[in-house]
Length: 186
Image 1 (cartoon, rainbow, N blue to C red):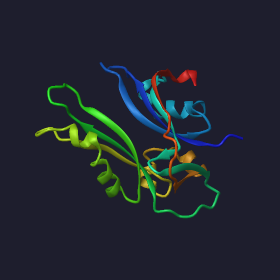
Image 2 (image 1 turned 60 degrees about the vertical axis):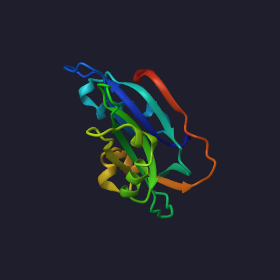
Image 3 (image 1 turned 180 degrees about the vertical axis):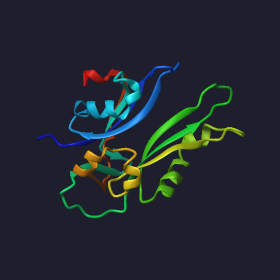
């Protein structure tokens, strides 16, 4: 039996009535992305099933922390650590665009996760007077933080799984897959 993993995906589509491709971030748990097809389609009904992936990663390591998925039934040591997703927005003088930087942060609190985000090169360099960098979305990814997890994982997944975050050094970085990838090919 394969081990379930946390997947982070950047979904793309051009909904009816839109002039440009739209994007959203989806988090799901499965042994492979193909396990999550219906959940992805249900997540973005306005896409009419015409969804592709522009990026995805299997989330195993964030900084010096190992991220594992465990059964909800398994007893794990209570930890104050949480996994946060932050979507930073910023501007570059003279460019007609809002640039984004998506990041995962392990922290005990949302306030500390935001503090860490403000230390990134993106936050420091993609803003100027009148158009400062900012944090667009803040989501916590941890089954103990129900308010925030409801924005990310389905009720079914929350009932079956929990995140286990543990300190670990010298972990290999998660492989990030980029490009236009049709959902039906997974």
